[in-house]
Image 1 (spheres, rainbow over the protein chains, first blue to last red):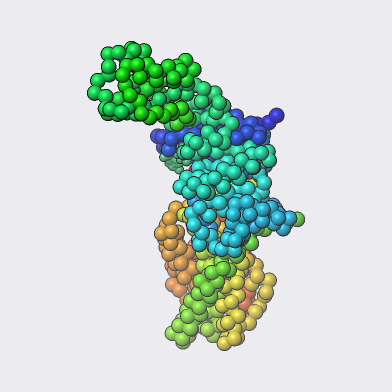
Image 2 (tube, rainbow over the protein chains, first blue to last red):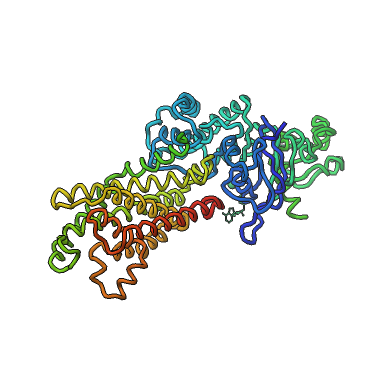
Length: 312
Length: 253
Ligand SMILES: Nc1ncnc2c1ncn2[C@@H]1O[C@H](COP(=O)(O)OP(=O)(O)O)[C@@H](O)[C@H]1O
Ligand SMILES: [Mg+2]
């Protein structure tokens, strides 16, 4: 089966800055793919190259088997891109913008039904005849999404679609994008919100300084070494100045942080039993009044991976 | 078959100036009429043009052509620079439109704007002054070619410029002086030999001169020579503009 997006050794420099240092990635059809990475990692640059908004210095990209340079027409017909920047054309209303965009892709009146559906799904119906200038940021963002989908592209790329968007709208967008994925669209999402990627994506690539530093299913990323850790945060009745001698060394080693009435322990999710740890603490004469556990999430994986790379 | 993508872009580019017609159609018509009023009054007894022709009549073709030139250029160049500065050019760059479709849609819209304003000036002026028409064919060919050349120059300038003031520079230091000095207000035969020669180096001179031939059947240079020169210029510029679009010069980074 042809890949949705095939990225082959793509390099891109801006002056002396190597924005992309040879990216290889295959995104499968029907997949919900997350592209994560800190600011300046090269995510948007990679997307621009896929979309033909930028030219790669080396390497090649194809969308559904169409080379984005040679067969740019077929490649672009198959691709919908929601750009990171909130751009708009102040000359037109929402519906005009969508009809024009639809026309660029060779579609006419027969597409009006789909345009109405998009407006409805993105809660824009009552804004259809409003000029783009008069829309709020969140509404403009939704128009950008509708614009990207107006030709029903099989592959959809969203570049930080929820940056600066309130919780309500973020939820609407998540639901909408999930539905698209269920209908068979391949989705590529870049985001800053790890919970977003964690909730939605099947597979995740982490980009840093123009390189892919991790590429795996979400499940395996979460099972990596760091994710087997479990943090236990304990509140004690009295501030602890010094750990009692009675506390077993095996527990002592697990304490990573101690501050007044708060103690933070790092446990191994699979080996340690919380009840046993608590019993050992109680036996040493420490009164526990409250506790909470924290599982490592993608954010920890992310921080771990990016800092590891930076120090090596 | 007319390709829908191309047609949509052409329609959008036309709608864009139509929506602000006050500024893109009415304002230039009024400016040109003011030139007409002032120059025909001040210069009508001073400037020698062709025999049997009043200066006021002589002025009309040149002013109409100057209007076409300036507005065709303004349309494609301002549309491109605006899209680039606001960033909404990406909506076009993301589509499967070919370079040639892109080019054609932009120059056709520029031609429409140039011709609409030119015809507007013409229709108003002939209410007050009678102007003969020697050859409609020449009139149309020169109007179409000139607006196509300027629409293309507008595309090139719009691609090249990164800021509004760079474009304004192009307009104020190249398009305006060349169109003013193209023999709109005088017959170059009234100039000293040196300045006659210099005028022949001005491409806009041939547009004005050939267009004037269409009205009066008289011109400084043979209209056929003008026609060939402008057609050649058009072919060269069009090829260059399409090449820039194909490369994505300053559009695709
Ligand atoms: N047009 C450009 N000119 C110069 N540098 C650029 C350009 N676009 C991106 N960069 C640089 O390339 C790097 C990657 O940027 P970008 O792809 O936007 O990162 P991300 O989207 O992951 O935040 C950054 O250091 C950025 O400054
Ligand atoms: Mg980005």
